[in-house]
Length: 419
Image (cartoon, rainbow, N blue to C red; front, side):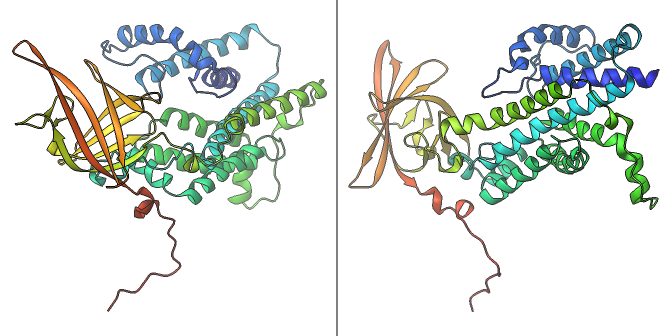
């Protein structure tokens, strides 16, 4: 009886986790994202009154947040209760059919995530090329996850290969005949992914643990047969009973299976086909995207070069324009200070959003000197007078493609040192 309750509870947990996970989708609506606001008050209540956490935490279901851990606790309890009630009050499906449904649900859910992440890697949107500010951040100042992301993102061939080794098991999971092979390959891939996430502190630990668990669920019915072959030397492979199920509506289930596969393909490929993105490294970046080294700092102030925005301008050594709408300044002590910005093509200017005000910044190209000048104005009060102070930083663009990390280098032989 316990086994029957567990089987039903596992099926419910798999479906609830997949449906309520706030995973962003490009075409189909994400129920988990829409339902996140509903779960947040419940997460807050459980955190405070059951686990004793204070209110200074994130109650939303963000990746690896406390809210997501508590949400998993909720659906675990709900699945256990629902599985218990199902076993005693609802006898529509046999134990063999329940195990079959677990295999189907786990197989297609695992296939979706593997295929989607695999496509994202192949088209270079997951492991994208390092941003200019990352390239000039000293190695010791990078967090482990940014370091790993940037290292992998610098290699197009490795990123594409890692995408293919996720897509292959995803496709194998679509057929009952190849599902076991797909599950074994998926287990190897996901074990490696989980080790990376824990070793480099990458914040998808809950999802990767769930996916690894799905691969184990798919392998478990075949575990004794695999052990007898590889350990006991047996030549017979005993298939589980659920594989012999003959569904009365074969045509309907075949149509449903085809529809699920089509949905996986469409959701994974739609964004790239609609936007014509097949290698993110080659996509257009925002205007002035890149890195600039500061050569001259100037101001209309006679005695100082001190800006309310940046402090002493002589301490600014590089400026970076980030593709996600950030202007980042690097100082001589390696500090980075970033500001969200928006580009206005009508005035060819950037608007910097600070905590207290907005500052309009202009970037001017000097063809004769081959320099870019960053210009902006600030206002400050002096003896009840408003004083406007103008600043400018004369910079030279850095050719990022000539940096060793981004150059397409490959060597069959180690070069000998020169005599």
